[in-house]
Image (cartoon, rainbow over all chains, first blue to last red; front, side):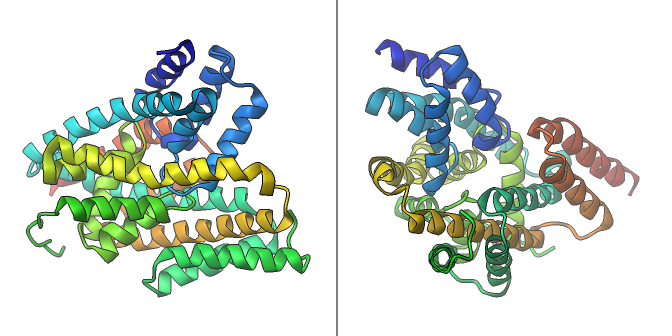
Length: 180
Length: 185
């Protein structure tokens, strides 16, 4: 392992165990490790990597794979992905098996039932944060409202809504209705 | 509560294509596409099972759907199934991301490109709201549930508390209340 890939490994491996809240909640910690602690990127490189990673579909954790790629190419990508995905997945694996063994226990049932409304609250929060980050104008909020309404009324593939959002964005931009 | 039917056994091909699609379709976070594929399109889990698994996976470290992929994979094909589900969830988005990285500098200054990404992100936010509404099907309907949902939303969405406050304060309170109520009943 080159020096850079081993730095990537330790930066992400040490974060993985405390990675409660997923990748978005971890951006400050990633910044601390990658920019301040190990000096693998400067501020601008880090910010543009995070922004680019948001454009692609898929789990937000991919931001880590992408930082690995930017710093050290394919080996960096593989090592970073393994370091951030490996430890929590091992834990989830163990927890999954333990839950299967005690699946009829009243305590586990109480935990599951109690967490369900919290998940809904968190999801509404994440919708709000995404909407605020996306666009602060009438077109942006209108698109958000329309796609929420579509989701409530139809059971169609959500990808269509994303494509329509992109097209309406282009149209609004051309008509000068959107602040960019 | 409706009793779910006995869990069906999912083939490796079914899991592979399912998680591949979840990754591919998951613009703006994968909660929306995961709910669409797992609950509505392929019916691997009931809404209740899905929201409960999501809850457990959200309080564990790591990406919540990466954790869910690990658990679902293991349930059907053991450790190999976990690796298969994780890999198929990550594969397509990674390739797309590398593609974006290569071309982005040439196109990022175009107004159309910026308008399209902004519009798509606004639409994705709406999908997340819609998915949250869908997920209420898996939640017990009572006042306490509504209070905990509202408190979680305010803490994370409005006051922007870090997520560990949810894990260490709100979740234990909710679980404690459910156990206390169960003991008195």
